[in-house]
Image 1 (tube, rainbow, N blue to C red):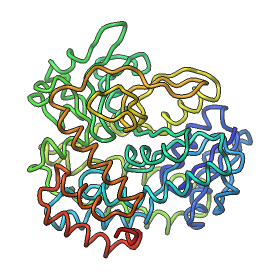
Image 2 (cartoon, helix red, strand yellow; image 1 turned 180 degrees about the vertical axis):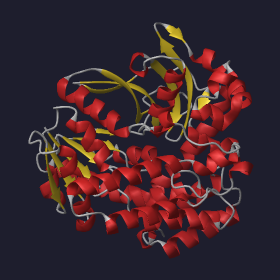
Image 3 (cartoon, helix red, strand yellow; image 1 turned 60 degrees about the vertical axis):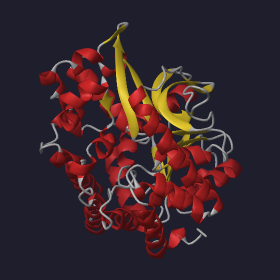
Length: 436
């Protein structure tokens, strides 16, 4: 089977490739990117990873039709505007004293306004060249992009590694095999809660939440603290730290600028020998994982990531599980971004939510959900409406819809600032020139 990775020169592509090497489902990976230089670097890293194996071949492409032809699966990891645009997303928001983060708040809206048009263009090519392919979206903000894509290509699912990592850490703290547990997780992308963890028919999560010492072994436990976790009766997704600790969180610490500089060095200085390129990539990957979420950890009192937290979440594992379930009819239950389809009464049926689903050879099947907890209802419905205004703006070019999205986001507290933000984003980011 063939997998096409859009954004094939991206830094995290080797994580996907490593997962594919450990399986025999995919025999051809086509890397598609607009930057031949980045493609060349990742080509060397993957060559070293393969270690001379001929079972899994990879090819590099800058022509979408060529890369997508015959694809069974398409993995979308676009970054419209590159890391330079991410820096502006975050810097402009921070300049107004707001959260400077690529998927949360004003920066997430600006990113979506670039990601959605680019992703829709991709989906139209997929629908024409490879209509049989499943489009697995990891382009951020994943929930919004996936929701927009559902109108263009029928075989679309969004994935994120945060819920997977949260459930894995909770299970490990309880001494459970994560693969044998069933997480009860609900929310939107980067706005969800783990409210149950079933093993052998029993919910073990209360045991973790009720033991402060045990809870402190979980990164999210240290991040949110036993009092809030106990009040909620759930473990929040790490990105909710921006909402629950808005005053303490500051503006985000310039993560985009750090990654832009780090990646510029890596792609510029990467050795030409494949083995050395792989070693350089792995060193940068570890540094990236060690510094992930540093601003939030500092706001929570300052703590280092444990070795267990440096293990990938991992979105590559979720993507492989989806492909195995569909391609081999090996059923799996996964936390995915998929249409609500009546599961949450507070949201429209065609809204995308992040929750457990069953995947098999017939496709994707949303699993029933308990109602949203009372503490989540207002936040989820408000943020979902912000997402839908953002999608409207991205599809129609409506500056009014973009201003409504910015104005009503809980982390943007002023209509005046919302209007100023849109003006500054449009001036700084040529990709937003379509907004009128």
